[in-house]
Length: 231
Image (cartoon, rainbow, N blue to C red; front, side):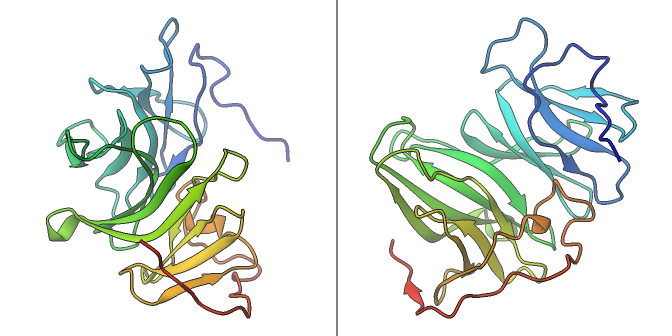
């Protein structure tokens, strides 16, 4: 079956990958209005058939939204910070933000199944240059937005940079892709070590519906030694 271009009748440009609401009735994505520059993205809600397109504006550049499994929140990149808000635009809150002594830039936040934590791929420092350090962070919203770094990545160039991160269906582990382009699995509390996967579990991310839906086969941990987490 051919995919349907549900935004064909709009003038929006550069739409990012969507995130499904948990009931499958709405999609959220970021895009640019006509004439906007690349740092003026807004979030948009739309029905899967392209109807009921609504904009959710903030005062900042908003990218990479993810709908929480309980349906109550959207998490997103906000001028490199990590923010959440209700789908109607209310309750905007920064759960991590840059400060004079700590600079970074977030990518692709994803929710835990209980809607209490986020995992993000975080650039350390706010300049896109190399060598670059990135870290995989779990942000515990139920514990004063505590940041738990679970993996560190070091890049000499941008060849293998991948932003995908996701929680496992039980919320106990986090998947990501390392600097050798290898899918990895690590405990969400930062304990233990890292294990290689035979593939990245994209069905754990919110652009699939239903999220964490069971595929033909689960990702398999490869029989390799555990690599200690280096921070």
